[in-house]
Image (cartoon, rainbow, N blue to C red; front, side, top):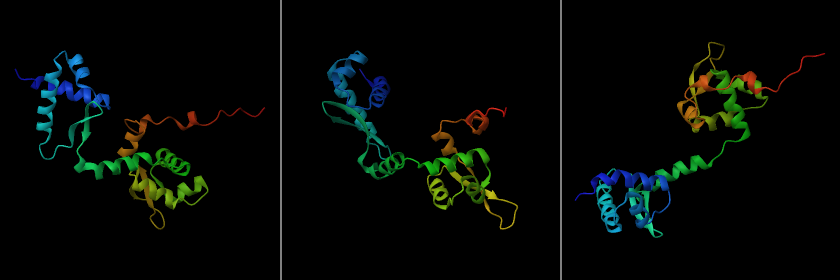
Length: 177
């Protein structure tokens, strides 16, 4: 009897766990014998060995774990470098200005922040959170900046309409008495 129909559920369990799952635990969840789990995992490892696939299953710490293939370690390390680098306060301020005022020039950003923003804008461009959207019809034709799809993904927004209204972000001002 083929256990091919159990490969999807097994892969889902390994992915969702994130930690090594013992064969007996997988067997209990799938209601199969532990020997079947070992055979199932061996079949999955074989089918995942196809060139171009990014994942494999390894046996570690008394269980099985879904992992990226070692050949892709360099590219995965780039992802972790990006994820570990938090944005500075200056970068967050600049990103907020671009998000709410776009399209906006570097000079306009600096006018709002009151400081030079060359390095911060470069950082945001490098992280693909902002992009050049064109040129302003003004003397010198300065570059206009706007946010990217990566910005939307990073902040969990469907589109720019999901940004809160600026008035909701400002402290309540009481009218002069």
